[in-house]
Length: 199
Length: 388
Image 1 (spheres, rainbow over the protein chains, first blue to last red):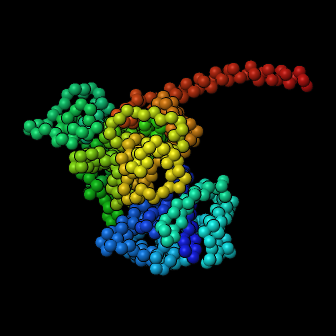
Image 2: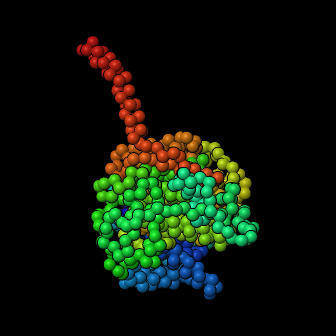
């Protein structure tokens, strides 16, 4: 139902998420933002079960900010990803596991850009590109085919547009628009919303 | 209680009790300075409140297999199901203990809707309480006032909704007393969402839309139709104090920006707000929501007609029509429609209207249409005969 995608370039990470908040068969909201800002250069994209997404993502968000307040410096994307995964793992075997699928995208001044794929079974993988949702079945092969590690920003956006085009063509559900954001050394940049008509 | 006074409960539930009021003596202590600045109070002192006499049954008419039998409210028409003190959330069975078996399968049938427009927020709901195939109460109250500027529509289990609304009222009142200002609709929604979170996975079912007006009392500003496309044209941001706030909101919908910290609320927002809160954890802000088994039918009517620039009369009529069409198609919605209108001065409630009348009016209109049409049909057939 929901769709997340991330593409890592040599010095940036491009992420996009759909804008639909649904409840059974009804689209309750058409402009819902599924990205949570953890810090100046880290974004957490979160989809999954209705209340769990916001609860878990806000929990991680507040804890990352608390770390910054206590220690005076921010968590790196890799550290934040591992912290998130640890929390998922801790709750997995409890009575209240969080059913959420995540993409964490960030830029580290030392290590460069990073994209981390996490799922509800608390697996963690650093990947050059990743996607969540049923739409991932349709778009991962496009990413496999056209991805290169030295993509420019425009090429990455073009690749993203190809994926969205494929979804609008073959995906049974209607995902009319997508939030797009880019993270690089200067922080998080909001890009123009991708709508199906524009693609 | 202070809650009833806040919400003008006596007007809704006890129309025969008009002016009797019990003011509990608090000595000579005057209300604190900040209390008088609160905009919600028009003419009554905060400390003056009215304790209604709740009418309880002596014993439950239906014997459930429960440990503490609570009085059933299904036989009391058009009254809140006020729960006794034994039903506090801490004593409810948690996921670890065996859930009490329900005596019959419950189904949640209702149609409620709410939307924003230039005149504030309009909330409408039907009044049928159903219980797996029978109408338990044809005149129930699905829109419950929480305080003078916040109203909540309820969907799901009526008892759960009534309880959690009361708990929310209590918590909002405590917040107001502690912090000297009213909690915003967004904050109230978040509070309710966090209170319901521990019960996720249990059979608690509450799907509410909170409709409120944030900010101090002000004149209703009728905005022009150019602000239709923006979501919240009344945002006052510290960064853009000039009149280009509408353009700012437009560009924001293009690319939702993080320039405001995601942690804090929009600073000094004032105006109508609408939130959907569900017991599964969903919390959404929006301009139009419809909840319940009849909601798809209502959505299709509302999506055609709701815009920002509606007048109050137009908004009321479209809300009524949406509920009517939903009750026409959905078996679990019906009887009457309640309409509440929330403005900067508080909420007002329309007289409850029986949709049966609406149905007969519609039938009459169709009949008249059909009467005029056969003349046209006959003319067509005659012309065809001539040509052939």
